[in-house]
Length: 68
Image (cartoon, rainbow, N blue to C red; front, side, top):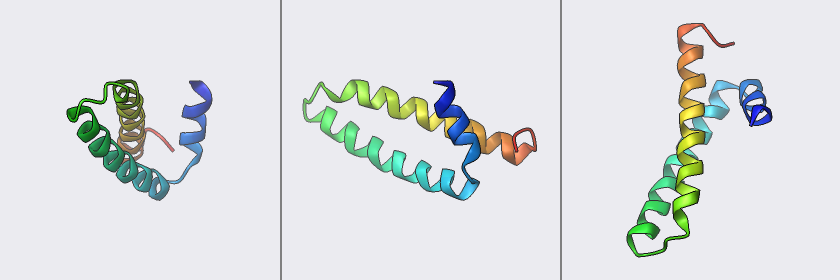
C-alpha cells in the first residue's frame, strides 16, 4: 500500500489528472457491467474507488500547497 502511495507522490500532477480520467471511465464501465448482473466487478469497483480517492487527495494537497 505504501509503495503505491509513494509512486503516486512521485508522478506529476498532469499524469495524475490523466489517470483520474481513466479511472472515471473505468468506473463507468464497471458500474454498467455490474448493472447487467456481473457480480465479479464489485471488488474491482472498490479498488478503483480507493485509487480515485488517493489521487484526488494528492491533487487537493498539491493545490493547497501541503503536498509537493
